[in-house]
Length: 296
Image (cartoon, rainbow, N blue to C red; front, side):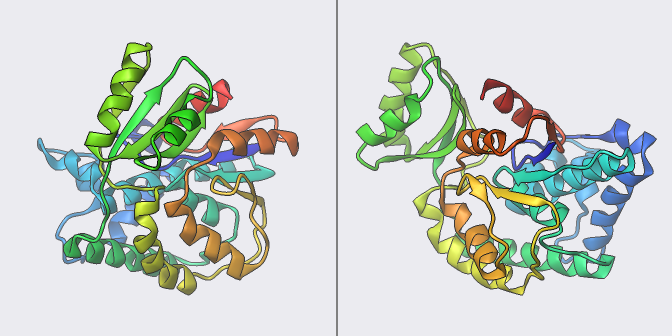
């Protein structure tokens, strides 16, 4: 059995409200993340935008810090419920931002008490706030492509001569392209004429492209401060499509570098299957990864 943790794109307003009403373990995580930011200078709590009371509050779900907080909390809530039910994995992998959840759930980043968790979350939030204030977060147009032709993404990228990048190879019939609008437009027109379904992602952060390499360098000190241990549950990386090594330095290096590398989710799921995974449980709020795995 493998647990898969989704990243940004899985969040939505009022997510898991029903689960929180039935399982104290789930509710506890949303209360916990509010306590992290209870005295924060930004002046609002994660619950303000996860469970919005007025129009416009939910827009914060797509801000860099809000998105990470929301998905991380929902993933942790579902993971806690699964553990309560006695469902435990032999393998774990995260998709993009879901890597934070995978590192913690596998025991690779042991968070022994609430104070340590708070420090970790505030440390990461501080870096995100700093990057946004500086305008240092690279941007690109990100478009999810539902293609009728398996493997179409790589051919398109190769023909572009580097003008566009494959940010996510999610499954044989769905991938995410990234690039400047002028470079993407003709490619998207051609895909549309061939019957592809196109959807712009609701954010423009150039995750998983070479543009993000400067941010990776800024993330190295953050990962360097993390308490890293050999994972207790076999941990995989969607950046390398392989098991993460047990060496702490290598884990930190791969975890930081993955933000400028494509998400090789198709290859990762195939490799995990070859290694024995037969049941994949999405420990996240929406179900996107379940659809990808079904297609693989």
